[in-house]
Figure: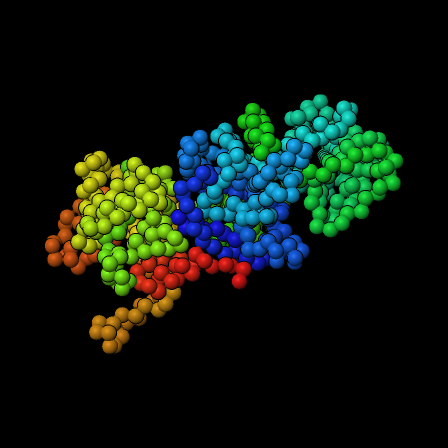
Length: 339
Length: 237
């Protein structure tokens, strides 16, 4: 069969390429249905990645957050029509110490190879997670939620047990889902969110407090922190975290920055802080996320709140239109994939 | 029920390969017709997919389906007709014999030699045939189309904004197209080779579905070269 792959050729330029693929395959053939645009996709689309990365990686199909329906499974383990989450991380080896999502040999959709902007995607058997009870537009952003799940799970395993007050820096999508998952996974803890946009901060109604970074009280003390800011602003966020965190607290770094971020190591050492970087989830995080969203439908309705628009797309002009529209949106844009 | 009819009745004379009908020529390592069939097989809405081929090539078609796709209960290979509409009617006859016909049954007919069609085009055809009874797949004409009666002088140049090029699939409510075809005289049947035209001439509204420029019909050696080039294209160069 000749499969259409929608690749980014150059910044703001999407083209179709045609791949000859066999449908007689051990891989599971999935029709993508809802695709969510991530900030990482936008860094490629708008050409904000460094020129060397763009030269090396393009042309490449974008999108690593997606859901779809199974079309064909030669072994019959998945039935045609079953709704699934697509895991973008694709490991090639197992390591007893390093998890699949951080192995340098693993490939990641829309980063190391083509993402989900394809007519059909051919998935390894272990890269699918059933999601029949999850709303499709919510399922499309599950990769983001799974990163939050992954980070919170790491935090639970690696931080000391006093978790009375946790601060989340960042009022964007990542900050939203991370603080949301914290309220479910740590229901006893006080969750405070710190951001810069009053409009966005209003969305965090489930948190114990949501305040502007300029209004942080001097006597604020938190036990641990999650940094979900990224970019240049990571520097001031990390500085504020170090100022307000109690000794031996754990700081989960999750925001991606293209440039170096200075950190006040003197205070970091004096307080004996632990910094852990987390940005990519693995299969188990997707499974945990799917089970949580199915068990708690309120999580789904809260996640749905940050999906500002679901745009049906059936051609290149409409795909580009969705990416442009997303640049003007505060939260998530999802494409209903009709190509 | 929703059926597909892959039209592969051609003998390939236009290709210059008299011995091999064009639908069996190789594209990217597989016969054209296999690419087309695979795309239809991935759409679960089709109950059965009929392939109408020239009689002498039925066993060959079955062989290559077995080779590239394997045994598949959804595919039925049957004999094509004298022409395009004859093939469609043969397929419909086979459907009727096997399953009977219901008022809501539709058929999506498609040229075997258009392997580059998309999931979206198939979906839009199914939806349009279900809601409107008949549809044609078209793209806006990019070249100016001119009208000449004698191939020597121009008769008229129609407004390009209103001119489109027809592709396939063409999809129909089965009872509707059957009735329209049976209304034709034998001489009409020889002249009217386009199933949508038969509907239009009988006052049936035919919905249009937007095709794609790349949904090309591979009927000449040049087309095959273009299709191979599209497949091997490296967008970075």
